[in-house]
Each structure stands twice: as structure tokens, then as C-alpha cells.
Amino acid sequence: MVGGWGNLGGGVTQLLMGSIIFPILKNLYDGSAEKAWRTACVFPAVIGLITAVCVIKYTDDSPSGNYSKMKKQKTMENVNARKSFQKGANNANTWLLFVQYACCFGVEITMNNASALYFRDEFGLRTESAAAIASIFGWMNLFARGLGGYASDKCNARYGMRGRLWWQSICLLLEGLMVIVFAFSSKLSTAIAVLVFFSIFVQAAEGSTYGIVPYVNPPVTGSVSGIIGAGGNCGGVVFGFCFRQLSAKSAFIVMGSLIMVSSLFSVFIAIQGETRLLSADIFKPMTERHQKNVDVEGSLDLRDVVVDTIASSDTSFSEQAVDDTIFT
Image (cartoon, rainbow, N blue to C red; front, side, top):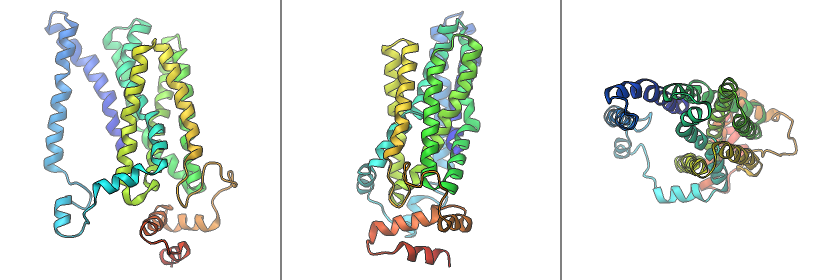
């Protein structure tokens, strides 16, 4: 939900910049669209600077407080950043999710950049109107990314990690399909309707991805999260090149096809101690023992973190002993 509301800034920016600030500045510059657009870019830069100052001055590094103070009080251990990054980068699951996140958040970045121009050029709209329609994509972040994460949690509660992976694949597959349908939408009303569903599945896939991230390697979740998050930015760059080199329709088709291919990557995700996408008991709910864990703790998160953390430092432990400790 927090990530979704952060991404909501893309929709707000499209609306404010293209439909409010740009027309005002265009009138001030006697109709010069180039001067108006260049000047409009100053506004988000100033807001970003103010936000950065507020974050540094008024917020903590974590819910437990600032890292520097916690280290002095010895309530937090010093972490070797290089070793943490190496552990995260050496995990194949990190890179599979890197590609999948490139195919959802990377698509969102691309749409924030290209959708207004597409609606203007394809349907002959004024810049102000095109920007207002394009902002719909970002506004879906109000609920869609949080919904994707919530659905992932529900799937996990019933089917374990297998459920999360199935939901991840479904979101990406439908997202890619919607991109291709969008490319062939010749009517404005149809394009807007498809854009809404396209956006919902993009945001849901983002939320679903970060429902999986904490399980990859719990002791180095920060590094894993950072690498996978960078995948979104890389995806934006790659898809941006597609729109530079190809026609808009061809670029959308290529992008949609790559997204659908990425949905297959879930098959190869193998997290220690978790069920895989194509497990033998693929359509069966979790065992009674695992369901009991869910009922007692609300989810498998606590048990999984304990097991993975101990396993990283001690190979002679018993998972049953961990369960007995937690649930007695």
C-alpha cells in the first residue's frame, strides 16, 4: 500500500503538470509550449527538494529509531554492506524477481513517460486532455498495488509460497495481455477502459512481487529488495528504448510479449523451505500443520524468518524444534 501511494505521485504529476500548470504557463509565455513545459519541470523539482529535507529532518531510519543511535546503544549490529549485497546478488531468485519487477514497475515508468504523448498523437487530443487521461494509470495506485499484496497474502495463507507464485504469474500474464489489447484499441473509449485494467494488473504485480521478496533471504532482505527494485528502473530504460526505436503500436506489442514471457519465470523460483509453483500437490491447500501455523500466528512469516535466520548460521538445527519452540 505504501509503495502504491508512492507511485501514485506519477498520476498526480501527470494531472498537475499537464492539465493545470502547463496551460497556465503557456498563457504566460504567449502560447510558447516549449518554454511552458521546460518551466513546468521546475515545480516537481522544488517539491522533491522540500520533501527530501523533511525526510532527513523529521523521520527516523526505521520504526525502532535512527541507525546511528541504535548502533551506539548496541541495539543494532553493524552490517557489512558488501557481504550483504553479495549474498543477495548470489541468489538466483533475486534475479528472476528482478526481471519480473522490470516487467511491472518498469512498465509503469514507461507509461508515465509515454502515455500522454500516445493519447495526444494517436487520438489527436490536446496536451491538457491527453495528460488528464494518462493520469488514470497512476491513480490506480490508490488501491491496486495494495490489492495485489493483499491477494498474495491470502494465497500464501491457503497455499503457501506456491499461492504467491501463482498469483504473481497470473498478474503478469494478464498485464501483458492488456498491453497488447491496448495496442490494438482504435477507439478512445476502449483505450481508456483497457488502460484502467492494464494499470490494475501492473500495480497488482508490483505488490505481488514484494510479497515474495522478504522470503528470498531474510537476513539480507535490504540488499535483495534494493536489487529487485533496481529492476524496475532498468525495465523503464529498456522499454523506453523500444518506444524510441519502434512505432508506438509495435513497442506496446513487444512490451506485452516480454511481460507474458516473464510470467513463466515464476516456475524457476525456488525458495528454501517453500513450495514451488509446480509442486506435486499443486492444487491442494497447505497441510494441516502449516495451516495451524497460519491460524496461530496469522501467517507463516514468523516461522519462516526464524528457520531461515538460524539456517544461515547453523546447519545443525531442526525445523521441528523451531516449530515446537514457537507454538508451545
